[in-house]
Amino acid sequence: MKVVGIVGSPRTGSNSEILVRRVLEGASSKGAEVELFKINELKINWCQGCFNCQETGKCKQTDDMGKIYSALETADAVVIGSPIYMGHVTAQTKTFLDRLFALVKISAGESKLKGKKLILVYSQGAGNDGEMIMKEIGKRLSNFGMQLLGIIGGNMLNQPEAVKERKELLESAFKLGSQIS
Ligand SMILES: Cc1cc2nc3c(=O)[nH]c(=O)nc-3n(C[C@H](O)[C@H](O)[C@H](O)COP(=O)(O)O)c2cc1C
Image 1: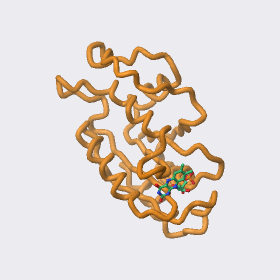
Image 2: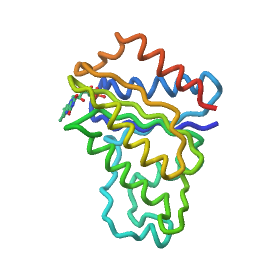
Image 3: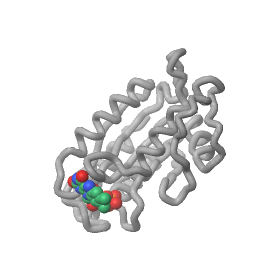
């Protein structure tokens, strides 16, 4: 089994990254091969809306998203983690999500994401809308055939590494990862 983690936080000590890593550790504990991509450290352009992918099945941009497309094609599960910025996922995460358009062919109802398991992770400050925001993203990706296994995250996590004090969250993240099968 192969599990790909995506982190959309730009910062060091990211709580969402720590949670994504815990999910991956849970998966590794059951023998999964894991790979982590940090969007902020890659060169990934915005979707240009050309619809080339809808005709050819491929994005015509040549950037680091190519590595992620390759990893996703062979992945059994994907873990996407993001902080909540201005009531949504970060721009890094949204850019990644937009670029997933190249893996689906809307008119034919085809999706290279079909059957892949999905876990969504968030981290936020004083707000309490992270779960709802991730549910919406989960619905969209479910429309592309992904199977949402769970959403994990918490608020009051402005301090880098604050989530290390939240044992219950770390344990839930590990457990969710170990349940990917
Ligand atoms: C530009 C910006 C916008 C933010 N917007 C929100 C928000 O709308 N709601 C919220 O609860 N927290 C918001 N936060 C706080 C972050 O979601 C919070 O610090 C989060 O835990 C950061 O995740 P990370 O540790 O993975 O980087 C914002 C932070 C920044 C820097």
